[in-house]
Image 1 (cartoon, rainbow, N blue to C red):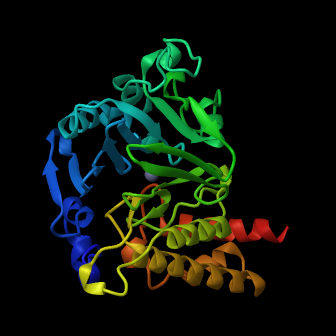
Image 2 (cartoon, helix red, strand yellow):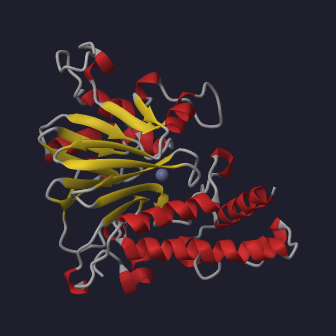
Length: 333
Ligand SMILES: [Zn+2]
């Protein structure tokens, strides 16, 4: 399988980000200043890596649709990279979640864009609607988080907030000649995750539900749950079609994770299976009356820690085990 680093996983782990991100051979990629990598995945579809979360870019006659805006500090470089791809204006920024490395560039990217909703367009909006910038679309809880007056994370300025939100399971648009679906996942990484499916490009943007660089971040304090995370991964599996029956063509649906390399359906299946195995181990230990500390001592993530684990940083193996434990403990109540 070309999309997967495959049997070279151990080697790949030691390679540079650029190599792991672009595990698939034969895709055009280009380096930009500021360490950004731009990868063309389809004739009208690109991915930008190195600006925080992976940034997806769909281009066409209607303009540019972006999924995830990356970190605020990289926004100018991202805008420059998009301008190298196309001269058409950014129309939409869709956020898969409310984390700073996904929404940090919202304000700058929206401002660099141009609204589709111009005066006289027949929908009755004033000319200065959104101050003329691109729309920012996300599930309702993303706005709730970003606009919270105080909290653990810094509040975002008003011009970074979503201008369009929804709470239903599916929000759709038809732009640049294809259907775009944003599918609300209510309790996975957090309570505000959106999967974005580009139906004609056949690309699914997963956000932090799927992160090939580490164990899934299940943010229990923000409404994430292990069962919701598994359900969301199953949703990704269901949306994607692998290269069958002609496996040698190495085609199929592309799945863009929140962080890490471009994947296919089988990669998501493996990631989901890993999570289910670890969940089952922890659930059995809880049933056997073990405490969290005792459970940590049994290394329930064994077999996967070399690939996904970490002893330090923002999301350690112990953080992950604890999140699964707390999520399952919550469930029992
Ligand atoms: Zn992220």
